[in-house]
Image (cartoon, rainbow, N blue to C red; front, side, top):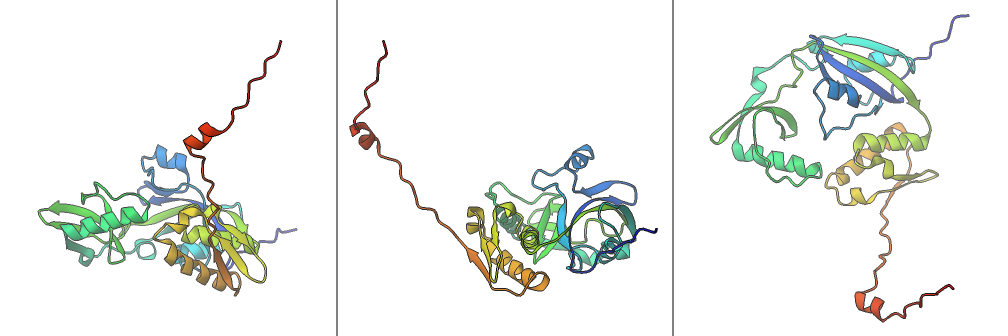
Length: 263
């Protein structure tokens, strides 16, 4: 009897592991930390683990998503995309000249968004910078001017994806957790989710002080209503009662327990 194949559909939540290669076989992105280290592309600020995504949400390349929809959970697959279906052809008009101060300010803001101090950050060739909502690579730095290439780093190249769908995520609570991870990866496992007629999400302390949380919150609500359920969403912040330590003089005035001797 022929085994029945059940393809995935748009709107499905999945957990995906993948490796991305250029046409010359160079590994440029991976969800595997060991592979990243072995191939010299490890970044201490990146997270190496399978990603969660929603098919049809536009987070992945269109042709890659369509290929994934034909995959089974646990099946290893490969797809090669030409430049026009991957990250586009190179465009000379996407190479721009910006002022040193503008680029420096953008780098500092990006560092702060990542929860770092932003100190001792300055433009230098090879760094990525976000200006006007677009990411670019700094090519040259001269007196007062910085040349930034806003072409995608993989523009003009054929790309091979080797991937495996590890699981199809089911259940309202698990899907909400996936949406949080997609939109706010910092301490996403520390959010507490309670489902019912209303959806209550208790946020961790790290989100309370993160500048990116207000925007992420609205994105999370939108995705929940589009892909999970049209419910009232309540975000809860809890500030625990502070337990004050006794002052030294109070401790000193407390009667000391006499030591018991044994004979």
